[in-house]
Length: 401
Image (tube, rainbow, N blue to C red; front, side, top):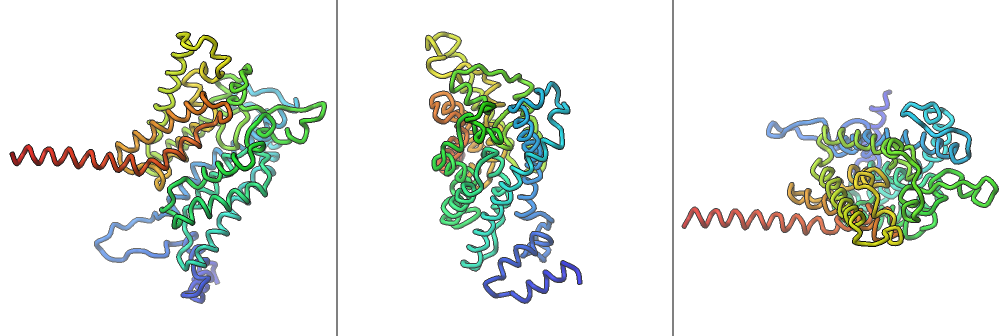
């Protein structure tokens, strides 16, 4: 008997029982949506919410694999075992040794993220008697990509449980949450366990364990170096392609942009939000560059090093690009109107750079900016709609006059 037939039999056996949502979730994930249309008045297509989520996951896979390689590379580089890369296909980066180290550190993060999150989703589905919601398919992949490589698994499990229950389920589940669940998890980790989410020892595997030894290694991110007014030695090549310390999946702007192109081509991600976020960040970066170059602040090094960082460098370092492509475009928490998307994205980019420069305690400001704009997205859409209504009413009055 085939797997499909076995699953169908189990589905029929548990139909109407408490466990029905669990079996329906497995069956629909592998084969068909649980409910399909049959009438001739509907537009029929093969895609549903699960397939949409799977498309986003496919766009994230290159970042995941690169993150594994980079985790191993940064470990060997900090230990003095390899030379810095000079080309994209440098052998010191694309090695099985790097991939192995990255896999044994990052795959457990993925397993814990999905295991805890989906378990909670299944429990809520069984208790409430509704179908298992698909929203966590993407969240479960995003979370391991926005944390340090050495984050303890129990911390991740606690954060995921908080994010799923408090950030989503209390609002009614997928489609009802006002905050991006992955960023809610990231925020919980940042404020609950700050020493594991910032500093110069958390971004490179094994740096914490060897911090007190003779061969202590430092894995400071570029943002952290600027925050401490330290010299940044990474080249633009390394910054753009991602051969730098940082969160697992956020370092390679090149791969993130490829993912953006894929999401825009498949009409999953909003190009308006992505483009406007980069524009907002560039504008804020240019403003700070002008302040630094015109001597409005006599000594910017005493104020904050990131003020003099080039505006285009702001777009490549930290999690700005990753947040713009994979977080800000969340269809549930983002603005829904076209004009609202431009405003929403612009403010995310603008506020992200503002937080970076003005608050040394939070050099990575993009997750705070997105969460803030998640709250204001309905307000933005409200005023956009009201503006359209007023303009149409004026046209009606002119025609009837």
